Image 1: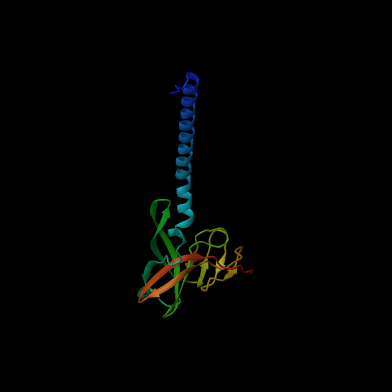
Image 2: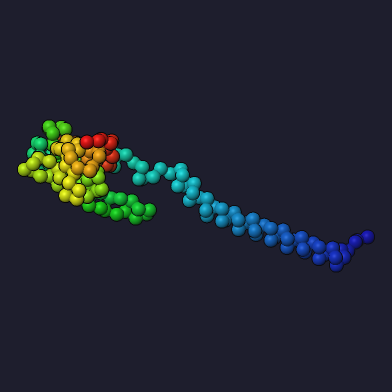
Length: 175
């Protein structure tokens, strides 16, 4: 003898099937949302950034053009990564050749408020015209409101090429 399902049994089974489909669809949508948000986050945390590289040196000039104990302002280009965009920026540095293999490169901003300073050949000093800070050829504060020496670039020499890295913030110094 065969027992036929009643109408209530069929409607209960249909409701159960629709409910299972709805629950599965909601779980699928949430899984897709979590994957869309989670994968970029995991990639950001696990993949080393190109900005964190310490060996980011660029060629800034030739040592042959430098005269010992005479600062020279050199211009160079550095690529900066901004998200997925690479921007080529023009930078400058004040470079002083102390001996054949000893070169110092100063960032072009005064350590007081970031104004551009210049080299005064007559006084043999770096002068900041904004607030009259004065720096010696070794970057130390001689006078003015600046409290710390000039910031320096990391420097590498390869043959006769001068390579500059990141700016190293100087430690504090009082006058």
